[in-house]
Image 1 (tube, rainbow over the protein chains, first blue to last red):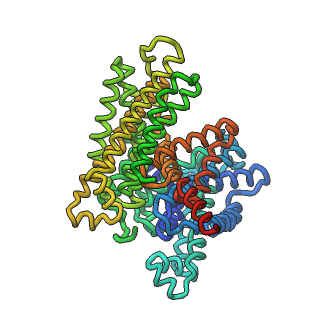
Image 2 (image 1 turned 135 degrees about the horizontal axis):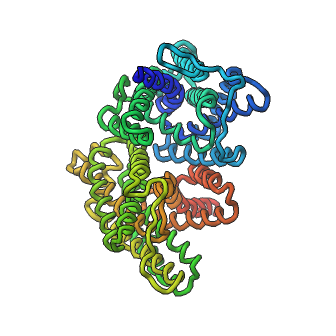
Image 3 (image 1 turned 60 degrees about the vertical axis):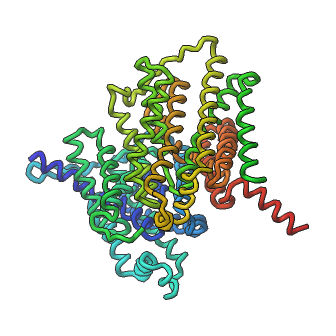
Length: 288
Length: 314
């Protein structure tokens, strides 16, 4: 069935979108900072996968293990060194600051990798999997599974681990958390680190599917925005739901209106959601 | 110096700029046109971002709208006055309508929504190929000025300069008016402003519309000036961010600061651009970061700080 194929494409895409947005949503929800570097972090992760595979012959699945701590560390340092200085400043300041940092990062990537598109091609290719009339490339399927595993891992860290509980506590009530002995600044750094790690890992996975270029960073950032607002801010299940909704909607929308209208569709949806349901599909009201 | 005296001084300086076509070559005129364009953007943004305190990223949306609305009309053989009128009206009406819904959002939500407006308009311009030429861009015929490049450059400089004067006149009058006072109230505490009878929705929408109308007209002048526009050029997100940086550079919230910040920004940008083409966006980013971390109240505060430390030292 043709529709089933489109649905399958949408679900694969949606799981990757969830992975892109989970970290972004965490940072936005906990720190109240929109990290405009998120897209560039993702692209940087893609380059890491590309360089590791083409330079050293390391498969992307192994690169994930390196990417996660590497990006966590970079994000942690970024928050401790720069962003914590303006964390209490108005929206305008934090937003403009991460924009400035993104300009620097993106420019550095343009210099280092040039603007031409690269592609990570696995050798030998993994082939395709056919379930009835639905055909899915295996590399996409594996990338989707890893995206789900990563997102679930983030969920578990937030639920079960000590640092995760502290992050949730700071999100719910910063002052009360401080009084309970939580060191807020290092929790902010940890949250930003997790956000960066998710972006980097998502980038490694996306390298298998999309061409890599510094110019794709804004497109990824746009997806993260839309997914966050659709699903509800600061929650991992919200990011998964939002990702799936966007992925499926884009696939069917591309069929109905043509792929060139995908961006208009998703941003139109974003504006409608912001106006009529700013808490998202399953978010709660009151978190700003 | 009182605010009134400072404003008078700056308006005087802007008036003096009119002499530029008599003394400057085409490069100076090009810079001057950009200076006036940036100043229109920064002073306009300050109405919604500085006075009302709403972090708008919609400047690129207004600019692109004006460039395309005016550009399409010009390419269909319309006159420049008609194009300016069309883009101004379109931006004002659009902003009033959008404002009623968007300005109910606060903080990040408003910022993201205003950002999304530019993205949607960009994609619409990209896909409405019949009207806008889509990704191929839009060619705009040369205006019927005779007398070569110098005359042409002077013409567009004076046009942009006149637009800046108009913008300054309206915004300075607004600052002293009931509307300006209401916006200050809204920035400090919107609920309280509502309570004492400020019609917050109307005031905010008006501020949004005024912040859009001159930027759209600047977009039309830009389109006529460069003769060729394409969606990624005129809907560039940098057009949304630069006015904010200019306003921050000059010190947030005052018209004079925004004007000063625009000129200072252009000076920095031109120097950086000319000397390091490969890394100019990175350096622009560095400027933003340094500014926000170390000089959050603008260059005006630098003078005050130096004076302050001098007084305590002596």
